[in-house]
Length: 136
Image 1 (cartoon, rainbow, N blue to C red):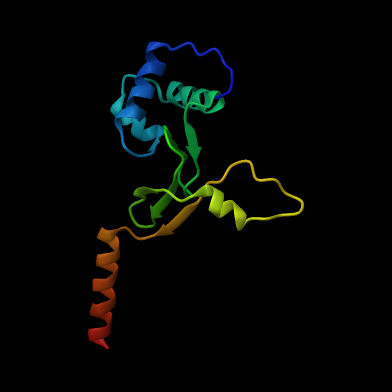
Image 2 (image 1 turned 120 degrees about the vertical axis):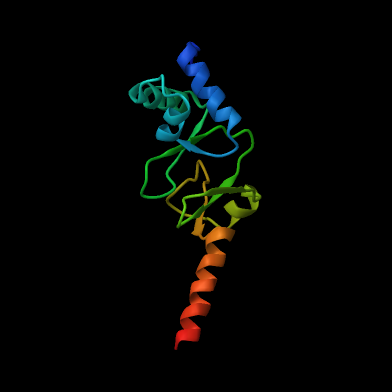
């Protein structure tokens, strides 16, 4: 964690507690829905402050707004293309890094995001495909 003096205001404490009490990644809008008394600009500003301080991680999981999460242990993400559900999974990063060798590039961080359909939407998709097959 970078050496930054962190002044924990009431707003910052509330935002961190909200991230801590949720098992997944949250957008600023989702945090705001849980803390409606805080201004959305205050939430964004503090989230960026926490990212710079190394307290939380900012994730770009799709074309929507960024997600933020506390990462006690490094992990990667699977994103449902239908509902934007984020599923966390772990892989051995040392093993993965052996597969990424670039002569003119040094890897400093490894973040893998896979996209597909969660169980709920995978089953709906399969039912639609079966239905289309029966219609033919």
